[in-house]
Amino acid sequence: MITVFDDLQRSHAPREFIVSGRPQPIPETPERIDMLMEGVRRLGGPIVAPPEIFGDDLARVHDRRYIQFLSTLWERWNRIPDAAETPSANVFALGRSNLPPASYPDSVVGQCGWHLGDGSCPITSKTWGAARASAATAAHGAKLVLEGERTVYALCRPPGHHAAADMAAGFCYFNNAAIAAALLTASGKRTAILDIDVHHGNGTEAIFYDRADVLTVSIHAHPKRFYPFFWGYAEERGRGEGEGFNLNLPLERGATLKIYSAALETALERISDFAPEVLVVAAGLDIAVDDPFKGFAIATPEFAEIGRQIASLGRPMLIVQEGGYPSPNLGLNLESLLKGLAA
Image 1 (cartoon, helix red, strand yellow):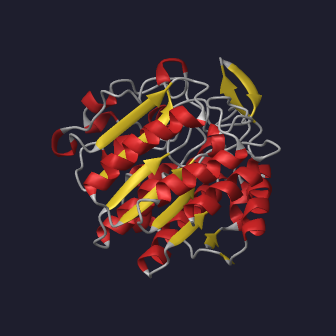
Image 2 (cartoon, rainbow, N blue to C red):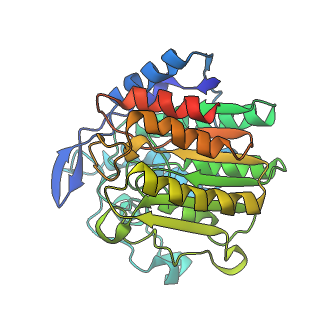
Image 3 (cartoon, rainbow, N blue to C red):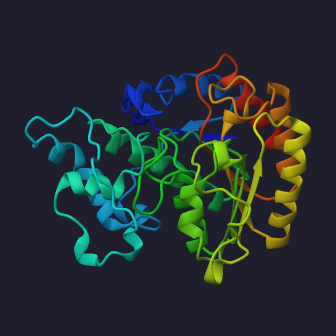
């Protein structure tokens, strides 16, 4: 199995994010890369760096003014006298879908209220470069699948599935899985996304919610008491042409393999009905029993069983790293999942 990875992704190293209104140490750290790489190296196989990604590929799913915002944010923010160290909003564009185009502000503070969706997307001077490298990693993984590779792992960090077309959120800046799926679709491949992260992939859902050409499926902890709170309910099925092409399977916290596998079987039946030529797996390892977010209770050997269950679809796969935070078994969990997926 080929692994795609860009070392520039280490450079994004924020210290804190907001939890229950207070700054807390952020678990989405460069340390994750070293832990995940332990699993990659035990599994073996080549590790390749992606070429640089440019605006046109990012713009397959992201608004160009959002891309411009991220690329200039740090410099513009630091021109503000007495500004906070980290760019943040003090006013949010609520109901912005009903706002006229002229309401988009020129002020960088106002733009933060438009494009930064929560307190979990801290910006540093290195965020732009690392987020682009993460997106490039997923895009190159998709290109390798198009070239005939059966299974490719894209070690993407920061993750992506909470990022919407014009909004960062939940440690995510560019939606890596969505960029890969859009690239595959544009190349003529019927594509489905299966998100197994413990958190709902709300950004991915939003990007494809009105579309019938990409199926989005997410298994996650029920959002009634779990991030992202406002999205991820079973009633969300898509809209317009996309109605019926989004499937959410929320589970109660603490779900074990038996419960998880039953939901996964439902997910795979829907994917099989869609008949994709390629499957993008948004691989969140934070379903682990020892993950700091403590959402589900999947043990290390059980990741291989989940991987084998997904592999039973018999489709070429791009595995895009999402969550999974520092814990003693993070690398082992990745190794177990990849072994199952490659079975």
